Each structure stands twice: as structure tokens, then as C-alpha cells.
Amino acid sequence: MTGSRTGERDTILVVDDTPDNLTLMAALLKDTYKVKVANHGERGLRIATAAPHPDLILLDIMMPDMDGYEVCRQLKANPETADIPVIFLTAKAEMEDEQLGLELGAVDYITKPISPPIVLARVKTHLTLKASADFLRDQNAFLEREVNRRTEEVHAIQDVTIMALASLAETRDNETGNHIRRTQHYVKALAEQLKDNPRFAATLTDKNIDLLFKSAPLHDIGKVGIPDPILLKPGRYEPSEFEIMKAHPEKGRDVIINAEQALGREVPFLTFAKEIAYSHHEKWDGSGYPQQLKGDDIPVAARLMALADVYDALINKRIYKPAMPHEQVRDIIVEGRGKHFDPDVVDAFLTIQQQFIGISKRFSDQ
Image 1 (cartoon, one colour):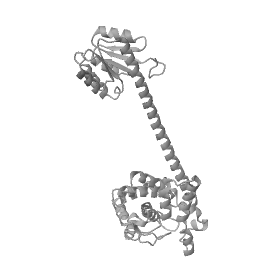
Image 2 (cartoon, helix red, strand yellow):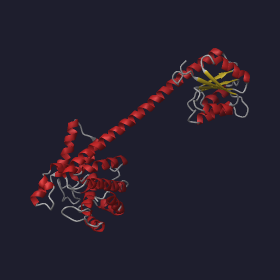
Image 3 (tube, rainbow, N blue to C red):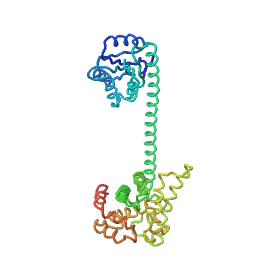
């Protein structure tokens, strides 16, 4: 008979304190199975817990020092041996004895004197059941590993997709890739600070915060559609130029929508990316663009990016302006509380402003 280890016979452990019983059972089983014997409970436990584990245990109850019930309790309490089927083989024939044995986790209960054909039949039955259970357990473990592998693969594809699109925008912008990294971490820091706020708790779940972090690099993807003379201009824009520049949020949203249409369906992980790209220039008082959204009509993701983007633009040097110190930038953001920015987002920023300073230094342009 083929056991759970391919090409090998199943191993039966017989635990009994009577030498004659061990001899009898070994003789009965040896032609079909590998047989191990133990003449007391403690030795039986040592053999059972040692690798490779037996495939089935025939266990006497009435033994000195440690009876079979206690051996069974310890086997079932140990994760390494809990799945090994135990058959009690005993002279204790009362119904209460059998009930206790089965309650402890034994799969069967055979009373002495034994009938050899009955013992062999029941051993074979329970080994077959164990083999089926092991197969299903292995299949479930395989399927779980496969699901995890494919989930990781999907996440990797998401990351690559986002970074590829962000890199496309980066090649056309005079800001550095570190701007993308800094704003990405600013947004995550704000989200972590606000996730327990009742106004934000439904949106800022741990899963969504991870998606926000991944999506943040796409906030300026629309700049790929802005003409070079305007996008790369080393000074402030004329009003007519600024109107053209103000088109980049809609262009960014459309880039992402076009990518979804190419797939033939909306992609959930890009929802935040669309919100951020389209609405991160909206202002709390409704004076932003492109839709003049106001207050809570502005998506949460865009509100977080609005503050992160302004902070980073002010604290770092640009062709058209010098870098500002943190304290000056902080004061500008506070002044924009309730006008440019969601008041709660500003309060979160003030609480974690040291994190912003650390992120700025960590991903410095120098």
C-alpha cells in the first residue's frame, strides 16, 4: 500500500505496555506497513513527534505512568501530530470509555481481544481517509500560495503601470522625480494621521491608503499634454499661458480614462489616480480649477494632494523662485486653512509637520 510519502509504505506506531500485544500487532501489520512500537506512553509521544511522523497510531489505554487518554490529549494538542489518526486498541469495553476516547480526538475504538481482519480493515480505512485529507490540505495550501503569488503579481503590475505613467510625465516636466516621491509620502503621512477622523475614516482605510500612496505619482500626468514652451517656461505664466496650463488636470484624468478604455473596463486601483489628477488644484472655498468644486465635494484624495503639492512647490527651489524655509511655508498653509485647504487637513499637517520636514530631507533634490 502506498503511503502519504510517495513510493513508501505507511508507517504504523503501536503503543502498548504488554510485550505480547506489541509482538502480535507487529506480526499482523508488518507485511503491509512499516511498524514502530513503543512500550509506554512517553516513548510513544517521542516517536510520534519525531520526523518523519507515523501515518497512524494504534494506542492502548491502560498503561502505567501515562495512560492512552493522556497520550491522545498531548498528540492532539501538538500541531505537528494533531492530524495523525489515533485508533484506541484496548480491553476497556464500557460505552463511557469509548465515548471519552472519541471525544479526545480518536478516529476509532477497537476492543480486545482483537479480530485481525477487523483491525486491518479499519486501519486501511482510516489511512485512506487521512490520505484524502492530506491531499485536500495540500491542494488548499497550493491554491492559497497561488492566490498570493497572483495577487503579488497584480500589485506589481499596478506599481509598474503607475510608475511608467509617472515617469512619462517626469520626462517632460522641469521638476524632478523627487517631487513625485516627496508628495507621495506627504499624502500617505496625512492619510495616516486622518484615518481615525470621523470625516475621513470611511475613505482612509488601510487598503485605500496603500492605493493613495501608489496613485499619488500620477497627480501631474496631464502635463504630458502641455506644450513645451509653456511647460518648460523658466518664469511665471502670462494669463493666456496659465489658461493652457490649467488644462493639465483634465488631460491627466483623460490619460487614465483612456488607459481604462483600452482595457475595456474601469480599474478600481486607478480611481484615486483619476481623482488626484483631476481635482488636486481645486480649493476648499471653490476658487480652484478645473471645476470650482467646493468643500466636501472635492475628493478626499485630491484634498490631501492639494496640500502636499503646494508644500513641496514652496519648500523647494524652482527655476522661477528660491526655496522657502519650512516655517514660512507652514504659515502660508495656515493662512490657506478654510480657503485653499480643508481645515482638518491643515490641522493634520500641523500635527505631523516634523514628518514633512523629514520626508523633504530624505528625498532632497541635492
